[in-house]
Image (cartoon, rainbow, N blue to C red; front, side, top):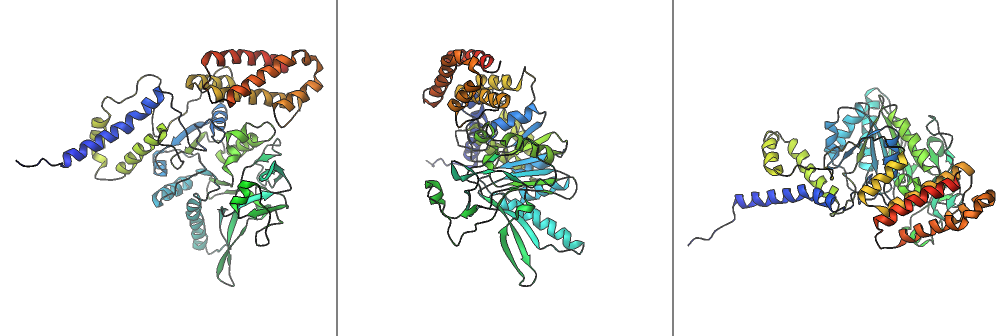
Length: 475
């Protein structure tokens, strides 16, 4: 009796089963309320390192958001120009992705890159190579061969910082293009890198890496700064400047440049500037900075494309499976042999898969539709309630009311306790409600810090208390 083997049919079945698993997983995850956007700097991440607050602000400002979850090759599918946003990439970019980015820029697109790990330097290399080749074709030569992220050291600033010199507070700006609104005075960073440039010496015929001068920057540190190369000492809070380290000058953490055509380029050497923890801090101007910079980059265009394909999504994250699935589709559609067969293959694989109801909908470019609720804050609370992310909702409640207090009364503090005490010293008429006000903030802080999940009825009660507390504090 002959032994039964495993032929090509068996292999095809395995591939189809795997494809089916990756296809239906986002639906299962959505039904089970598994968090989407686990990666740092994801616009779906509602934690301290996520960009969900920036996403909400952009939607509220009328922007149309699209998301790439496969690769930058998908830029070919977008006919309009707009702004490509790359924040905190952890994966390298291949040559074809860089080529598609170059086409996007030549069509008049703009790009914002915020990076402190150096993965985006491969993109910058091709941009500067293209620019230098263009100059050579017209008989010009530039000594500046490129501007890059210097990720070999952490910027330390003893002249202006928040708690630790590794968290510089940027107060120096060289806003040549009138990008920033007058409200931007203090920007909080966290373990930032710096921006350097590659300079060509015509005499020695060599290139050198030097810090980008402050006068050529959008924003920069104080002269009491240095580049700390011992990352372990930075984490432990024991870093001190050494003789062989750059220091005693201002270092660039942001630079902008108009490109050929209508495109523009912005480099920010700390992605944390745009993260929820910094954006939602009422004591700093990170949000106004982000909106001002994006407004300049878009130049009236309303399309913003976020690169989620190069972020470190966990395997449990629905975007991980979606990214793999659409990466296969993008690669297959680029092949002249496979592309004609795709409709048939998709029909076979996706039969019975199409989502129904209001669950998570996986698409390559997810258009985030703008809704018009009573207010942006109400829409944010509805989103949190729909996703049952009550801890983030309560945190948003606290940040919102503290921000409103700071705007209306001009009070500040290191925490909510200090802010409220400073407010009561100015408004003694509110002191009669002191116990109720402080009780609300203490309960919210306790629930957010606990590992236990918050029940829906508790969240609903606290929302009602929040409305009553808001009327007392902001009346």
